[in-house]
Length: 273
Image 1 (cartoon, rainbow, N blue to C red):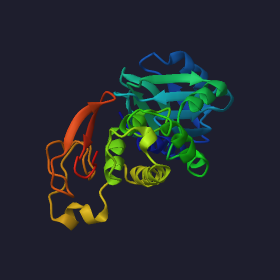
Image 2 (image 1 turned 90 degrees about the vertical axis):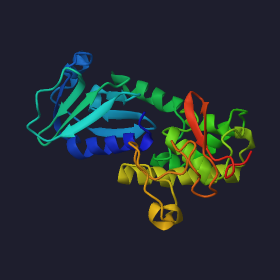
Image 3 (image 1 turned 180 degrees about the vertical axis):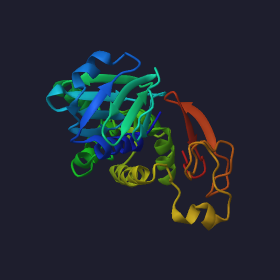
Image 4 (image 1 turned 45 degrees about the vertical axis):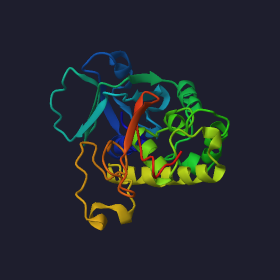
């Protein structure tokens, strides 16, 4: 499932290609046909992201709410657009670009009130300006500090903090030497503030580069004289999907286990219990 930086990139793509322009809207697959007919020939007025949720604004007509889920994918191109495949849930086509959405968990036309309800059930997002410059870190910490649930599980709970996925979870806990099984209430405010600030920086880098790199300059392949990571997820990481491999810092074996229905990765030496 894409992590939050990917959705913020998608919002920026839509703004750059379609905002304030008239778009043709269609649903070749047919599952979004009624809403597409209402939006066809209207102007895209905005695009924004909150966690793993994308919102495409069409003025008084409302918002298209998209959640990619496990299988959703976006494709962008320039005209002439090819005939759309029947797997395309939503196609936006403008004078200079088109976008095809396939396989999302959610693609629905919603009103302002429904959009507000989605925001209200989500936690603060390290990539939203209003959460970073406001009380986002404080709001997340209030929930974490009252919970007996492990910090690793809480970081994946989108009601606690929005946009963090399995990669950022594993990597930020390693970077701060925190045992993933520690209860949220045992995370100090100082530790949480450092985690939040790190997520802000790491996820902003993800938006900028379109990949997740979490190793510090001293631990890059060039600095350490080690081979670069070869993985379809890309990016240099400390523990994610490195089970049974040596830790870059201590040389100990990276471990993995199932937690919150996802594979957890950590170094028991660098993240002591």
